[in-house]
Length: 344
Ligand code: KG4
Ligand code: ZN
Image (cartoon, rainbow, N blue to C red; front, top):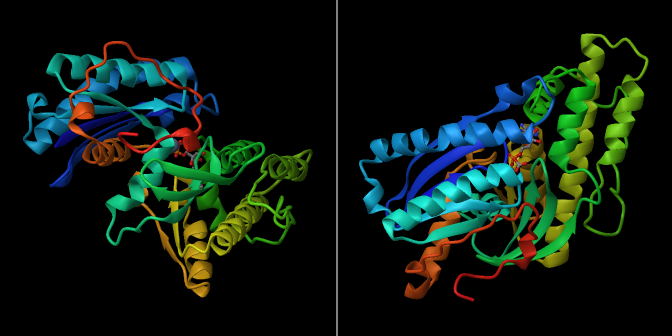
């Protein structure tokens, strides 16, 4: 079965073709980073308008690359939520229009399910069950994953997401948007420990997180001071070390508590090299293994949406494969743990 995946939840237009036997055939991405750079964050209306311009040409490009035609599609998948309402509506309307014209199902996919299952496209892939650390611009969650659509929330951020903390700290340091890669690059020249930042909730006896205090602590370091390049790099390094400390400690605690030995890391912050190195090293000491998507599939992309839909399609009965819906909506807020397995 051949699935087209469309991702338009935020500031990245991603499309991909996934074949259930042949694997990922083609994918393409357009990032809007430049479009939003002057504003220090995503401007929703600009994001929606740009998605409209990009989805169709990108889809044509991957069809040409793959040698398949639209008429070969067995399903059209799109990100139904969570995300920016207007941006989600672009992908949803194009997907439903296409699916209706082709007589195939349109499948709304949860964005975080896409992130969470993306590491299963790699080799070696983790087996169910596993623990997932979801760290993106909007979410920081630890999940217990028993199968596709079987997700149990173990802990989450009480305020800012890890990626959001990277983005806000980058702004305080005068770096561009998105902040994660910029902080990570600057941290390479910095010395963690030169200044001291808190590790929020490191010793709380739960699996929750909090990152807004960390951002405030950075603000206090920056306020009223003329920082030179080294001073800014030192703050970036200590900030990154603090986030990594907390994410690693809580992830390992989730492994210990659950008795699982596999950890999957997904979402944009999962591209962070310092996090990957610490997690892999410390998990190994526990006898556990960590799985990551390829860096290009850590941040938002169409492949994870096409892949999640392909897994659901394979698990579903013929009644779902033949479903045609006319109306549709999107879910800007949508709880991952509320999902069900295919066909249930
Ligand atoms: O998963 P994602 O692409 O979009 C959301 O679903 O939010 O994640 C984007 C977030 C941004 O906050 C960005 O700053 C962060 O991931 N990010 C990183 C890195 N690359 C992206 N954070 C830390 N280190 C990175 N290398
Ligand atoms: Zn994402």
